[in-house]
Each structure stands twice: as structure tokens, then as C-alpha cells.
Length: 315
Image 1 (cartoon, helix red, strand yellow):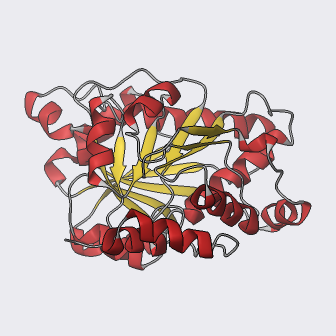
Image 2: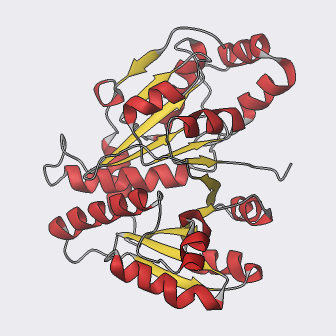
């Protein structure tokens, strides 16, 4: 899928419909729950060495969630619609040290540490109406969470993480098999690029089905609407991006058409036409990046990006 890189600021291309805004505003307010394995913070090395004052490179993502919460509390002091992080730990001997690390980072209001066995994980995620689960290693838990309608991925931490914004949460999504279903991706994998392009040309006006991360994008957009309603348009503490291997042709149009049919808005979209994603991600400097292709994850890690592999199968 080679081609020119196309970049769109979608806030200038279309606005979310009034009907969609009303839909989000009428929905019940519940916490946006993100469950994370304590292992994504490299706690083992720190706990073994006796140092528990840092939560490692993934801390920037958690701190960004805390900044968004601060703005929401400022403008909606009675609202319960805030980020909540469940930090999953299966080692009783490490639990007190984990608590200490959270206190030192002043994250007690955001993070709730949970001690549980793996067998109890999915039930706990469902009980807490979890929106996103981030594992540290491949395993059946990710696939089980996805089957339950929970966005889930394996989080990889670069050896040297790039500096990111301290005031704006930046989230980058891939399209196919992440926000959208894997319908077109399967055509590409089974029949090649020409068949993929022809498939999307024929279906250019047919919206794709939901992908596993559509719901998580929806809750981010709901928070953005609330903040923008308080005048935080240019300085909104949340920014979303679509960075896809699709080109700016029929396949790119279909992605935009699908978002519009859902009443969903992405702040910026980049259509790479098959180019590597690392250089674009380096310019965006996201706190977190979601993709279903291992090659894109490896490339992003080389640029210091915290990257999450969305694997819909255990293969």
C-alpha cells in the first residue's frame, strides 16, 4: 500500500452531529476504567532492588490521565465521569511496595491496586465495567477480554521513552482491527493489496463494522465534548489521532465515511499509504499507541513510543 502521506485535521472536515452530541450527553456518567497489569511498570526490577519510588516509563500515560481528571473536576466538580485505573497485581509479597509507589507518586485518587489471581481477572474487569485492559505479556486474558467487549492489548515499553506532553493526553489508534473491524484487513492478508483496494473501492460508501477499540474512542470523545463545552477547545487536555496504512484514496475515504456514519470524530488523521509509522508518531509524541500489526509496534518502539499490540487471536 505504497503512496503519498496524507494528513487531515478532521475537526476542520466535519463536525459531530447535534444528535450524536445529545446522545453522549444523555448517557449515564460512570468512571472510565482502565485496568493495567502492574508488570507494565517494570515493578519487578524495582521491587527486587528495594526501590519503589518510580512506576517506570508507563507513568507518563497515567500522569496524563490524572491531568485530564484535574480539568474535569475543575469544571464538573460533582461528576463521577473520571478516569479510574485498576492496577492488577498477583503477588501478595509485592502489594505493600506497590501501594507505597502509588503514594509517592501522589496517585492514590487515580489508582486502585488490586490483588487477584489470573483466574479472577475477567470477572473483575466485567464487574468494574472496564473500558480498557492493558496486559504486560501475551496470554489468553487479552483474547478473553476482547470477547467480552473490553478493549484489550499487550503494552510494550521502549528502552528509552520519548518526552511527551504533561498537559494533554495524546492517544493514537490504528484503523483496521482496532477502531474498525478486521474485514478489510483479512482481505489484504488473504488476497493482497490489489484485492484490498478493489474491495474498499466497491464498498467505499458502506461503513465498516465496529472494531474492539471503538467504545474506548467513544468515551474519549464524550470527555472532549464536556471539556469543549466549558471553552477548552484549543487547549483540550485530550487529543485523538488515526494513523493508518490506508492511503488517501477510496480506502482512506471509507475510513472517514465510517467515522462520520458513527457520529465519531478524530482530531487528526494521517494516511500513510504503507509507509512506516514511527516518523509520524515521533512528531505526534503520543502517550500511547494502539495497532494490530507487530511490525508497526516494533517500529514505534524504536522511536520511544509506548505501544500496545491489539491481538485478536492467540496465534
